[in-house]
Structure formats: C-alpha cells, structure tokens
Image (cartoon, rainbow, N blue to C red; front, side, top):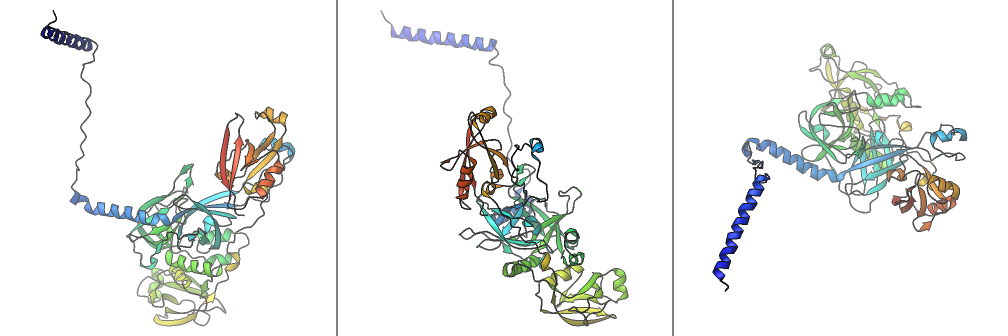
Length: 515
C-alpha cells in the first residue's frame, strides 16, 4: 500500500545523501578550495574638493574652451607639384622602378604637406601660415565633421608667414573670435590648438595643449633666412620680413602650424607658426604670429590679393644699455636709427642716431615691435614718431611709403592635368595571356602606378590591381578609362571597382578634383 509520508521521507533522505556525496567529491577534486577574492576598490577622494577647487576650475575652463573653439579649426592638405627637371627614365631601366617597358612613366609624384588653419568668417575665409600652402597647386580643407572641400588660395605673404584661403560650403560656418595681441601679458594662460591630421603614420586630429606666454617680441630670423634662400629674391628685400613672435611653452609640433593660439576667453591672440628645436620637434619653445599683425595682413590679402606694406625707410637696431646711457634715454628701450634711405619717407625727417621710442603715442621697445606697429597702417598714412635726438625728446611726423615686396609674394602654381592623371592613376592594358600570368585570369586594364599626394593615393587605391568598372561603365581598355574620366566633373564621386590577383574585389570611391 502506498504511503505518501514514507515516500516523502525517502526523497528527503536520498537528496541529503546525494548532497553529501557531491560535497565530498568536490572537496576531493579541489573545487571547494578558497579562491582569490576581488580587491575592494576605494572611490573616496583623497584630497578634499575645496583643496583642489582652483585647479579643477582651471581644468573645466580648458574643457569649455576646447569645446568652443575646435569646431572652427581645420586641417589643411596642400599638394605641391612634382619637380619638372627630372629626365625621362629610359625603357631599359624602368624595370628597376617597377614601371612597365614602353610606358612613358607614371604621373608626376607630388609632395603632400599638411598643417592647420582656422575659420574667420561664416562664408569660408580661413587664416593659416604661408609655409603651409606656399607653392601648392591643390589645397584641401577638412572640417570637424569630416567633410572636406577644395580651397582657393586668396593670397599669401612670406614676409609675415600669413596666408588666407577660402572654401565654399554653401552654409554658415563656425568662426573664431579675434582678441588683441597687444594686450597679451607674459605669464597668462593660453591654448595652442591644431588639427595636424596624419603625422608619423598616426592620425592626430585635433590637439589642444596648454601653457603660458613666455615672452613677447621674439626675433628668430626664420623668415629673413628663408627669403634670402628663395631663388630670384633680392637679399635686400628679406629685411622687410616682420618677426614679432609671441613665445609660449604650450606644445607646438609640425602639423599644428597655422592653428590658433587662444586666451582664456577663447579669442585668437596668435597663429601657431614655429618652434625652436634641434630635433625638428617640440623642445619647450613655441612661437605664434600676433593676431593684430595677421589681421592687418589678412585684410589686404582679401581686398587686394597682396599686402600693401608701409615703410618709413630707415635701418634700425635695438637699443643697448650703452646706447641708452650715451643718448640720455630714460630706459633701455626703443630702436636706434642707423641709416635713413635717401629719397625715402623719413628722408629729411629722421637722422642717424635718432632713437625712436614711440609711434602715435604707443611706446616702442624693440625693432620687431616698431615694424609690426608700422605694418598695421597703410601706405600714405601719416604717423607721429617720438624720438630722442641729442638727448632731447621730440615728435616727428612721417608720411609712410610702400615697401617693394609684392613681386616675391607667393602665388599658386598652375599646371595642366590630363584624363587619368586627374585622379592620380596610371593605367595600362594587358592581354589575356599576360593577365593570366599575372594572376588575374583574363585581359584587362591594370593600375600600374598611383601618384603621390593624389586623390587616389589619399583614398588608398592600390597599385597593381585591375580596374574592372568605373561607376556603371565596364572597363575593357585604356580608352574606356580616358573617356569615362573625361566626362566626370570636378567634385563628383568616381566609383572604382577593382580586382586583385587573389580574385578579391574592392570598391573605392574617390572625389574628382576640381582642377
């Protein structure tokens, strides 16, 4: 007879036996040994919030600054044409350069340079360094949202290392606010911002570094030396270069050139331009072009396409302690006139050994400051110079002349680009037997080379692949390539369908350059 109570008791009994057996087995196998416990992690601040509040506030200010100004900072790619003085490679030697015999050569290998810039107007004007876009025949600007646009060089000035370029986007752009570089003080915090893009094989979009203003009015001689080495430039004209750099310990490296240096209000006080280094990389000294000077240069470049540089026509040197004592100066400050250009604006107004200490009531402490202050005016303007002559202080009025610098102002280089070269690809037809030998298994059009700094190279089009289709057109010959590309307008997307030797296919979309 079935007894429910006895049945339930048996179930409980056997369950307990099974549990004890299992526990013993697990113990024998070591399953119940103690394991390392997770450490208890403390999240309690070790310093009170009040103790670090000033530093936290400054950090938060940097965060807010970076978020506010980076949308207007751009990356610039400038392509310079390849040298044209290289002789054609004979067919017999082309195999050493991986160029098929009978081919007249690959497209010219251009040089791709990069830098930064910042947008100064909603309709697309951008300030950058002259050395970023100098001699470029193609300039591309990348925005923060990853869109890019071909840019036009509005004007460049190698005497201040300032350039203006422009993009047409069709919509209002974020812009930078200008500060007053004359009010910058040594010791104040600044941020140096750049968008260098690719450097040392690594993408480095948007770098923000902080530091203080270390000094003002630094004269490095960089622009002067560059102009003296420029072919066809009269060495005397190099003296018209203006170097009134703001020095900072904020990190500035190659690629950051042309980016803004901003104060704690987020206003631009300078254009990152140079570093003093024995290695080519940052070693603690960074320099920026004062924004007041750059703003004046920009105005002329936009309005005239070149700079109308005023001059007073004197040769000057800095004042030494001995000069200050000899000429009865109240301090070791000002510039000593060493010579006056005959027939120039200052002829009959100034004399050698005059010491200029102010311009229109604003004190002048060194040569670059006087040059920079003069450069803020226009030829034909009248300025009042405060000078010491024979230990007496007096004012002299000078009508500014125009410096003869415009014949060496850099201009974009123009060249003719043909069919496939517009994208930077060189193609060659291979018959079926050669196609099979190469691993493609058929005849076709092979991309034999990709020009450096070309749109195709930027998009990673591989050399040695077979071009099977462009957009919706099947490619069977080099004439097909030429015909299709000739019909594509600048700015349109070219869809390249590729086949490699393993049989794998790939599609790469490239934007056709506008010129």
